[in-house]
Image (cartoon, rainbow over all chains, first blue to last red; front, side):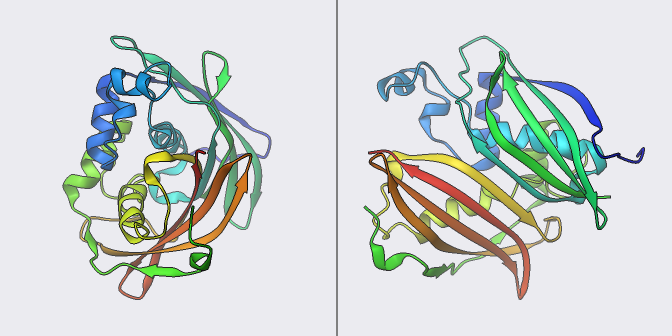
Length: 132
Length: 127
C-alpha cells in the first residue's frame, strides 16, 4: 500500500445496487424486513418504492474502506443514514463513494467518507479509522 | 414507549452465535470482497441486530416502527470463522424528539472474556 497523506483524496468508486443485491444482503445479514424486497409492502408504509438496507449502503462503504488497507485494518467505522436509497425494479442504482484522509496519528488514519446517489448524500458523518 | 427503568441496563445474551466460514463468505460476496479470511467490517451487525432485538423484546420498544438512524462499530480484532460470540446489549439512552423516540443501544460481542467488537445503533421509533 502507498503511504497515506493527510488531506489526500481517495479514488471515487461506484457500487451498483439492484433488487438482487438487496435479496442477497437480506440473506447474508438476516434482515428480511419486507421494505427492502417487496414493492407493494414498501408503498403500503408510505415509501416511494423498495429501499436498500441502510446497513447495505454502509457495508459497501465498508468495502471501500477495506480496499485501503484490508478488512483487518478497520478499527472504527460510523455513519448516519440520512436519505433512503430507493431501488426500482430492473434498474441498477449507482452508489458513489469517495474518501479523504483527515488525520494520521498513533498508527491510525482517519478517513472521511462521502456516499451519494444521483447527487444526494445518503450517509452523513461517515468516517472510519484504520490501522496503517 | 420504552420502560424508563430499562435505561442503562445491560441484557446479557444466553446463547453465543458460532461464526461459520459460510456466513463470512456469503457476507463478503454481497459487497464484492474477495478476502474471506476475516469478516468484513460491518459483519458484526448480522449478529448484534438480531440478538439485540431478542434481548430487548420485553423493553417496550416497538420494533415494527423502528428506523435505523445511525451506526457505529469499534472492532478490537477482526471476526473470524470459529468465533463463538456472545452478545450483550445495553440501552444507553432514550429521548423523545418531535414525537419520535430516539433510543441508543450498545451491543458488545465477547468471545469468552475477550471483547471482540462493540456496535452502537441509534434507533428511531416513529410516532
